[in-house]
Structures are given as structure tokens and as C-alpha cells.
Length: 197
Ligand SMILES: C[S@@+](CC[C@H](N)C(=O)[O-])C[C@H]1O[C@@H](n2cnc3c(N)ncnc32)[C@H](O)[C@@H]1O
Image (cartoon, rainbow, N blue to C red; front, side):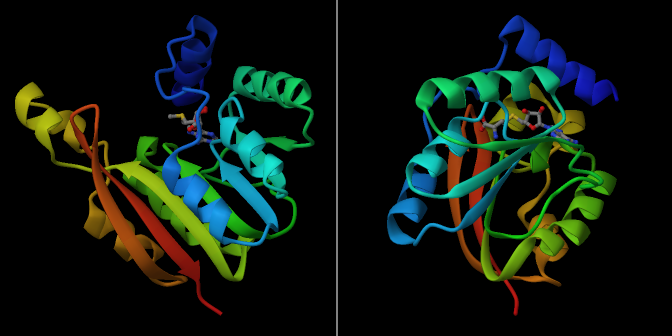
């Protein structure tokens, strides 16, 4: 509840540094190398990546618990002239997700959850991804320069470790690749998982 209000406030104030309006190269590479299918954007925000995927021929559904973000996504999709489906739901329960998907994308949502919520999310997300389907996860990781310089050990506990992520998804997903990066002085990574058959 508090986290939802926190995100609503951020969208209200426009304090949304992640909302660049540009899809990341890792997603673009994926779209250029895969046939379109059905895609789910988990924590879709204002829909930048939904619109990009729709423009590449994907049938897209976005889920977010921020009503304001969903309204902005609706408006952006109308302006872009693409069809997107938007679901207001909490990804710690995934109560309202319709159907199954060939691709699920999480860009910056999973890492904002508590460890208990991440555990629940990881044990549920496989239900929405078809066998052989792809789960693309971009997350900030624990450790890194930001924590070192900001003495952010308390903060550091908020972000998952690579070990935690690989362990949580291992029961239902094969890990295909991890690409590390630095994002705002934080260690980050793109994980590509394949849903086991
Ligand atoms: C850092 S933003 C990223 C948004 C989008 N993926 C992007 O890259 O522009 C994280 C998003 O996850 C959403 N979110 C966080 N926790 C959530 C939860 N428990 N259920 C649904 N959405 C959540 C927030 O409202 C926010 O839109």
C-alpha cells in the first residue's frame, strides 16, 4: 500500500527518472531477433516498452499498480496509434493476469519489491509464460559503487543479489544469459531466462 502510494506520488510529481520514453537496446535486440507473439510487461509504467513491442507486431498486455501510470500509458498508446491492453494489478499477487505469454518483460519492477514479495512473484510468474517462452528481467543488484560511497548498507538490502535472482527463478526457468552494467552508480544486470518445458 505504502509503496503503491509512493509510486503514485512519483508519477504525480513527474519524479520518474526511469521514464525516458526510450526502449533499451537489450529489448530492441530481442525484438529484432524473435517472431512476434504475446508479451506481458510487468510493472509497465507509462507504457514505453508496450508501445515499442506493439510497433514490432507483438500483442501486448501491461500490468502496473499505479492508476496514474496506467492512464498515461493509455494516452501514449492512443497517440502512437497502437492497441495495448492494460491491467491494474499488484505483481506480488498477480490476481488478474489474462492468458499466457511468449515473452514477459520486467524492467525495474522486481528489484523494488521486498524479498518476501520477490519470492512470491518468482513462484507465480511462470504461470503466465508459455513453455519455451522468454522472461527478460532488468534489475539493480546489491553491491556496487553507489552503496560503497553512500554507505548504503541498509539500502543495499533492498536490491536483490544475482544469487537470489538465479535461485528464485531456477525451479521453472533456465538461465540463458546475464549481462552486467552500471546504472546511476548501481550494479545492474539483464537476465534472460527461458521457461522450462
Ligand atoms: C522503475 S518503474 C519502471 C516502469 C517501466 N517498466 C519502465 O521501464 O518505464 C517500476 C514500475 O513498477 C510498478 N510497480 C512497483 N511495484 C509494483 C507492484 N507490486 N505491482 C504492480 N506494479 C508495481 C510501479 O508503479 C512502476 O510503474
